Image 1 (cartoon, protein in one colour):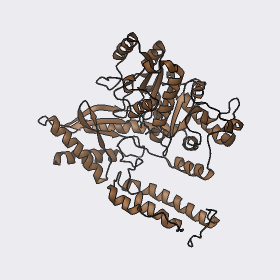
Image 2: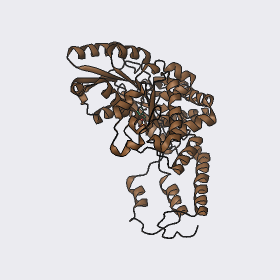
Image 3: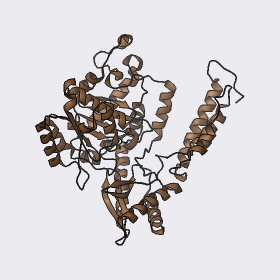
Image 4: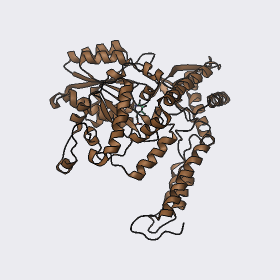
Length: 475
Ligand SMILES: *Cc1c(COP(=O)(O)O)cnc(C)c1O
């Protein structure tokens, strides 16, 4: 490409557009093919990496290919590759390529998915996709929702609807919300954003299985009522981040119906599994909730950012968010037409549903079922592998693609075990071969693996655990 002119239209010539587009797509494909051989995670110290991008704002033009190369060579090597087959840290994001292509399409069409007036076509696809998710969860036809940037925003959206639906303004101060001690931090933060005080959030202690203890919950609710407080919401987990524990959703639904609580299920990690037979069985009762969140950018294999909130009665979501200012009167929607901005906090919003819709159309639901089943099996394989090694113990068995374990021979102190487990996980991750980190459970530092990537091989699991074992013994 010739050097760029100083062009006030901010446009490229047709040939330049084609060439740049080809380069981006060519890179995307080669990157994907090379992925398994690249480090699963690589972090640069602050000063080294910022020095590469420290410059004054360029006044003149540059060749777009040169600029792109700087990103590819200078920035992209330093990141976690959540779609790498040996990325087992946090929650993997094993994006599928159809979803990636869908995002390119959405960017090119520059879809405004906030009003029906400006996005009826995309809106129809978003409604259909949400309807599939609601049906898979077992929710009635009154259900609706919207796509959001992720689980944190989906949870916040649902919690706002819960508050608006269940509480008068006067009641807010004596209101209480229940969750478990394993609940994701986005719930506490969401409640703080909504103005609840820490003492209004009651963490129910979990038992040995890291699930909400129903008896304890009943006792606490009764005590709160006796003390003049107002229980109004329970947040349960369809797969905790720490251990993949699934709270007893069906029995909790019964408690919530009896106690008139809004039941929100945080399914950011686990609700993606409703696309599989096993997931639907494990999450029985999900359809009785008032709302749930799901992160298609986790176990539904979509690129970031793609979260979703589904509410059993979509009118409740609308009542909680709808405002119609003068300048949006012309964008009023009628009947079944939906202005998504009336259902959540965003007005301008991208067309996040397309990637999930397109990949479901292209691969079919059966392929997703098999891909999710593979995630369940990989965690079970990891568990079996660890059980076969001397000195290792399973802390929480495989659940929703998560397993935790630790190394501690009989003569090793807890402090020494903590030190070694953390050291081995960090050393393995620093090596780039795999990303495996630790968490803290029952006061112990344990290794945690989350195995949602359907492209992870049995060998990947075997080699990852063998390397951990070698590192921990060599300390
Ligand atoms: C990942 C996760 C979240 C947060 O979702 P984001 O998409 O990161 O905003 C919330 N809850 C659980 C259980 C999660 O695993």
